[in-house]
Amino acid sequence: MCLKSNTYKISLIALAVLSTAPAWAQNYPARAIRLIVPSAPGGGTDIVGRALAHKLTEYLGQQVVVDNRAGAGTIIGIELAARSAPDGYTLLVGLSTLAINPSMFAKLPYDALRDLAPICHMVSVPNALVLHPSVPARSIKELIALARAKPNALNVGSAGNGTSPHLSLELFKSLAKIEMVHIPYKGSGNSIIANLAGEVSVSFPSVPTAFQYVKANRLRALGVTTAKRTPALPDVPAIGEIVPGYEATQWFGILAPVGTPRPIIERIHQETVRALRTPEVGKQLANEGADIIASTPEEFGAYIKSETEKWARVIKAAGIKPQ
Image (tube, rainbow, N blue to C red; front, side):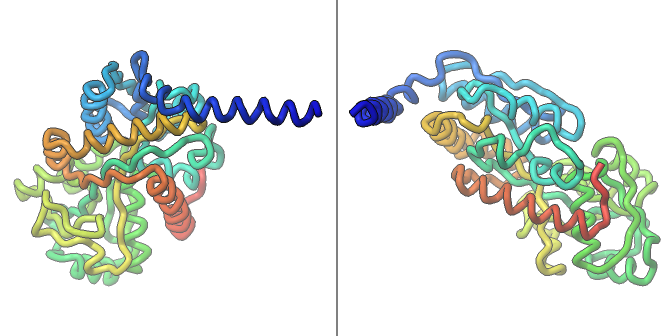
């Protein structure tokens, strides 16, 4: 009898929680929300985060404050988000390193698939395969032929080990079956300067970073790393048009600590998609070379998992040892 009574009470409590959840979600938020950006101000993650924060502040009726927590290959900011209370008042702008870091580091203070709840894959940003003008290659096919004729003769700069530009290179080498020498720099700014100076022959900067130098003919763009061409460089082919199966994008999404109530996840998703579809935000992100995705939480979760598996294979094939 006692067992039946307790079961009945638990059922009533559960029913009460479910019945009040929609109303509770409508009352959210009651105070300011912190949006963690795990990189320094001014970069692509920060640009996307601030564009979102501006519109979410408008739509949610509470201030959404960007909190830049750069360092350790985005690990510091991601860990802070993963360890925060799952109450909807801490959100994270996640990026490609969520899928890359598990294979680049022997031990992480978080598990992205376990500790974070995906909300929305917001945008993808292509990198560009660019050359110093002195390199005698006018197409991807010519570059591949040059690299095969002279293995390891071409130096390729990147923003650092394990970054999206670095792994864009490693995937290109693997699929094209060529050898080039990777030269890591401390950040994309130093890498692009080295490419402009001819210290390295090739690099894979983001399209927004490369755009002005390509237009000024200071660098030659041979391809973009997304599956299709980007409107920012419409005459530049996707590498996948020449190298089947090639795709390597920088992506940005919004996540929350795992355990954040589903009604809050749904509210943030709804307002994020609404923000991404406004002409104001759409134009701003398009100017940065971004393609708007606006996925569901489930689609984003599946994408992070597939990206994690993909880059694990690439990193292993490249012989990169975890730090």
